Image (cartoon, rainbow, N blue to C red):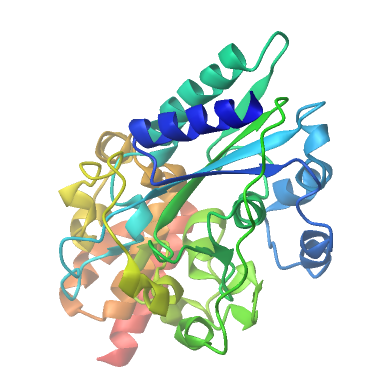
Length: 344
């Protein structure tokens, strides 16, 4: 019965539009305590929620008692239609559309309902899309979805690193799939590509230097020594992902995400963004990943991007931003003005 249920779940996952669906058991996902060591080194920066939730990340039983299996899914997201023009703001590829949490979450809820319905009396299942204390990449590797590369991201041999992940913890025992092994070999392209050298060693990321952390997770001021290295990236960074040689085998995007992209997020105009008030920000980015940064964070990033771009036509807009009631925006606008004037 467990094999039949697993087949039914995988068939349903494909019908719902997921690119991949595999199963692993509920053993601790980090037996070598790599996350604990990473946290002790301080590489998580201000992401204190990672430390607070460490017991759950190390033990799935702390999330769902009597959990026996984990269903791992992945949805491949599409390539951008064209490279952004010079001078536009850069948004990470995964964020150039509607909020994937909502898109994948609804489908995972359907799979969880299938498990609860067919798994027998008392079956319980919980689903997550980057929304809970789950070591999703470790579980995905153990389920055979892909392998964790030297940039700490998951790589699939048929989709590269362009994957969004989800999980279902369930009390049903399902036959596990074969884990994937690492296939990076001697390649170190991702380490060389990182603009801020945040990948300090293979499989070790110092989030405090990572542009994705600096432009999304960091809530305060971006360290001045790192600002010039950010370029025009205003939400995330794909540099270490772009250079992965496994991307050459990437196939079609998941049916879930083929029509998910938004044109206004492919190459947003920096000067236009800098003029957004609170209402304008909410209207523009509601229902997208960029909503997470809030206006203060996004406009902070826009100021840094304009300073790095170095165009004098931005000065009047930045001078207005200096008067913004949000101190974080005003400080980064002053920095950008100084950078542009120094480089003239």
